[in-house]
Length: 389
Image (cartoon, rainbow, N blue to C red; front, side):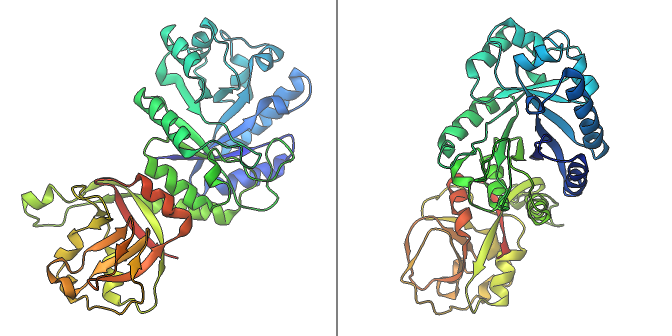
């Protein structure tokens, strides 16, 4: 299950506001808070005092604290790769190195005796490989993408996904930043254009960003990069988590050969937001919304994702044809096969590329435009469901 995190910039925020924000976020399943340690001015003692208070608040609400720092900051705080006791005292659970040492010190840092996890940028492939070669314990390592405050500077999804796959293959977790859409949010600098890792995420709802990362299947944690996100955004993200991560038991009496095909156990599915057409029937709603484990078997992925098992439900043959002015169905349209193709009646389909409307399918609705990109990452056996927009 993907972890949920958020970011705070305590040099710009009061501890009272921070506590209220963390208290609220904890109620919606958030468990990591990212902060910039070297952004807080002052002496070693002043910085320590600030983060001791901050850490106490974060731990009170069950958060792990990930502190962004670098070698210069370690020196300022009297720390070293062999001695991170000052971070332990400050309540820092993870240190995110803004820059590696690029030598054997990285391995010593990762294997620190205090048990503090070390997080590095996903882009530090060569330094991390060197650290592993020098004996760094990969189980004590994390990686995290950067965020990009300036519009149009964030990398493409393809580049990010390539890095995700690289670290997933090594068993090292990957965190990524998404962006709150609240007006007036901030990061470490006076720019208010969001703080995403992926440029295509900059202007879309947080729940669509989260669904996208779940669909990639190679992200361990999603962090809101800018502050403050709204409680409505927290609610939307929790709803996605509740719909995405489910447990399904096999119905009683299912034959063994069918049981092997039906998804069951602890499952992950993508909850697409669906804009319904007028005139959708109760039966069509039931087939689309009530079936828990829509999935394509993968043998004919081309024009559509096919959820075939709905046509085996007793009511499925009752889907009457409905008139539709569309001559062509487009990517993201959701269809139900009707009685004009009786053997397949009740099958739920998501269109992947343009299809002629031959009268055998009823148009039920269209996936929200911000979520169409998720279809790029849906393949054989990937589960999906729908919520009404």
